[in-house]
Length: 236
Image (tube, rainbow, N blue to C red; front, side):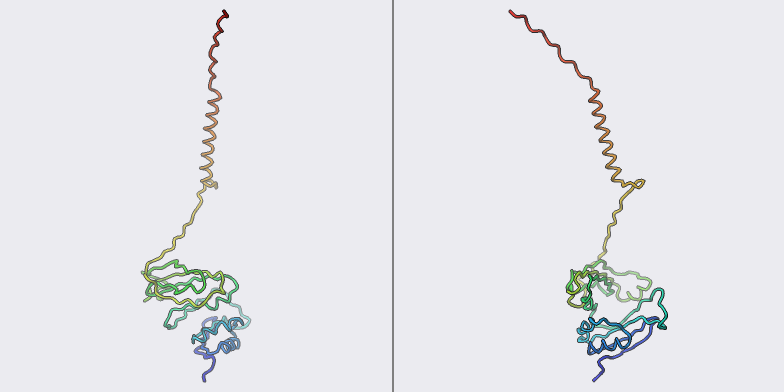
């Protein structure tokens, strides 16, 4: 029988120690990782069991300075992983072990617009952007070659323990573009004073002045003398 853990490859990429592994036993995988300097929380050992049962491969990555007493400084270059697969799957099962709410931001490059097949125990995912890239430049250019449609998804998991599986992505019913619009309200100010306050205050001043003028006019209006009183007729 083959070994419980197979080392497909191991290499050093800058400050990263990278190992590509297969496993038929989650306990053996945990033992190998610990023996080779990869820290794995104890509660993750059983969480890896579904992936082992489905014959996944694993990429273990750790930061490894040149010497034990040297420190890492500055920004780290991102790692680009490429592999063939029959389905587009984003692993999420390990996130169910989180003790605080989790959020997911996922960018998918494909030939068409993509969507998650299910909500996997959280609120429905939202598509915040979907559109065909006409002339992507920079680092995005090579990635978008042959897969020019970008879909950006976001999802919140207020209760991570309810995550029921991994996100399996499928083609959406249409390639309808989506562009999120963010409204940014700004308060106009005049000399540091909100314009609405000046407007309301100005109207209040005008109204007060108008009432004062009316009151003054009423106060200065001459009073008409009473009509003359006719003497009573003489008694017979």
